[in-house]
Amino acid sequence: KNFRIQSKTKSLYSIYRKLKAGEKLDSIFDLLIVKVVIELYPDSELAMTPEERFAYEKNSCYHILGRVHSIWKPVPGRVKDYIAFPKPNGYQCLHTAVFFGEDADYGMFPVEVQISTVDMQRVAEEGIAAELFSSDSGAPSNSSPRQSSRGDWKLRTMLWLRSIREYCDEFSSESSRDLVDAVRLDLLGNRVFVFTPKGLIIDLPKDSTPVDLAFKVHSDVGYRMIGVKVNGRFVLFDYKLQNADLVKIVTSASAPGPNLEWLKWATTRTARQKIRKFLRARNRTTCAKHGYLRLMDVAQSLGVTVPSNDMLARYLPRISSVMQSSGFPAISTLEDLFVEIDSNAHSEKSESEGLERMILGILDDRGYFAPVSVTSTAANTNATFVRLASCCMPVRGDPIVGIQPHSDAIIDAHRVPCSHVLKILRDRPDQCVGLEWSDKQSDANSGKRDTASLYRVRIFISARDCDGLLSYLAGVITGMGKSIVRSASATDARRIASLSFEIMVEDSYELGKVIERLLACEEVMEVERIGVASKKNLFDESMPVPQVVASDYIRVVSELNLPNDIVDGETEQRRK
Image (cartoon, rainbow, N blue to C red):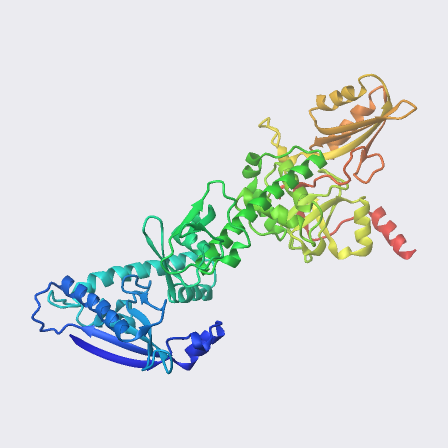
């Protein structure tokens, strides 16, 4: 046989890294390395096939290992068989450590001996693709000793590239640095080999735990793991696996899955990545459940219909458009919506129940929610949506003024006499925007009512109490074709009944007709249109869900037109 013996010493930087890792200098046995590379003579008279020749070379490595151990005393536990268990990068070699010296007790120092064939050494120096892209790989010869291993190396190259691709897919959402670290530490670091009950050999990085093994086998095995047996005995999840350990993962379909503590036990980046992915998904599911329950609670507290998942899914594009215009992230699923509701509820900067009210307002409006049509560019607005203020509840025909706080994408339309408008005119006139109703009307010829052009309004009725008063007045309103959203009533000690109705009307003219018809009733003493801030409001909540209107019904104008009595009164107030 042809032998080639090489020797080298461990670099100072490698020694420094081991010391930094916690090893002591007297436990480092590879300060001096002797490499033994063997190959049969090309003109050997032995008649062998390429496969037999390659197998003979590998057996020669084991023979030399035995001879080394017979001459020098081996260090216990330092034999590593990378020929039977190659590293993921294709590295094959026999490693052993022996005490070199004359006396078995004194004056000896450890030496690491590495035994390999020429082909193994070539791959170790030039890489796993050396056998595929070498100068003689274009026209291989059947008599070449290396040809016997070429198919084996090709398979290993494919497995190596496949493992790299799996890492790329696993860390696609992370930074490139995480991918490089994972490949460097998990695939190129020191290895440990363990067995499964079915006899499969699992290759893992050094100091791996059963958690790493479970996720190495399959993600579902890791998610369902409830215990682990090593060599027939139950061990903890932080147990450091050793070479030749027989490991059995105990799983259950009802397992709770990983928790944050598993991140301390997992040493490989792939296992930690899968655990973090599971925890994010579970936390997301929990947040979505809390967001859904919060939306339902707000709907019930406001006295509006609790929306179903089908209704939310139907209006999800409209809700997403409104939320984006208000600074929220884009949503594409109901889960995204519920998660954002829960996240917004725990935000310090968010308004209490603001997002929930906006969503319920969109569902209550049922009209097409579209950008506002700007007929004349207003210098102080970049708004894209308009909603009717809940405090004064304007309807078509009312003089309206827009208020746009903090350059938001939504303008709140108020009636001119609204106290909120007067306050803004005094304190922040730059937030006022001119608005006017468009000329769009319901399609009378088609006989269909344009539901998007119906507006909510509240009226207060004072009447002498009698049997069936509430149902009688409600019949008068519905008899005129108006829908009643809700009602409330109370009676004082003088037998004077107070009733509040929230109804849907087309415009202020139709509202006037309803008020006139109610005043014509015998028992009615007073009928008044009220706002939310009115003391005559009998409803429980202080601020209903704002109604959102389409761009066909309100448009922004460049001038802010106010009645003279409002302007004069405001000027007098400033003068005082």
